[in-house]
Length: 173
Image (cartoon, rainbow, N blue to C red; front, side):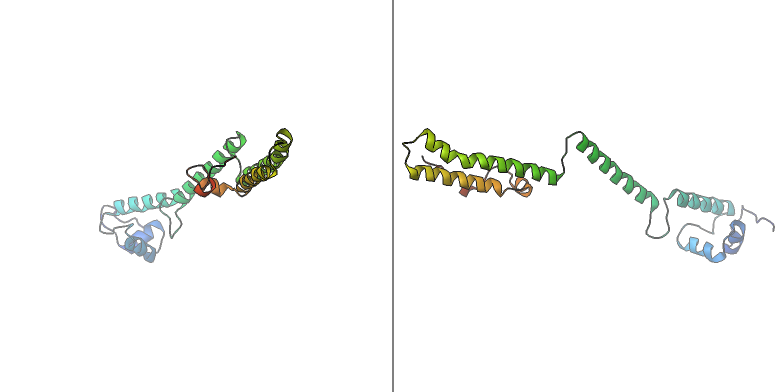
């Protein structure tokens, strides 16, 4: 096989024979705009080699899969995962489930303290009428129920950081 004159344009069949692909494969590359058979053979060969380098580097993939983009996306996800793991190890971040468990235990302890308040008031101020002790107990129960029904979603939704206006009425003793 003799080499064609690379200073002249080549036919698809000549170029295919030169690089070892079929004339149909060359036609496909021409149709996709990768190759232009009107240029001298040397430029055609350089364009083909450039295309092969891009494919090997994953920058010009066939089909929907772009390897460079996929690798970059994977690297980004791995970076985020490692950053979250580091923040968790440094106690800067807690899993939501653990945080909810901590808040539930704290709420249970606070509820126990709240429940003891009416009895403590009765012992400290024995002259206080029973209906006043009952009213104090009712207000404590209301506050305890609000605290018990709180969740992380409530904290995210509550921009003001407080309870609803209906729950903020003044208590008269």
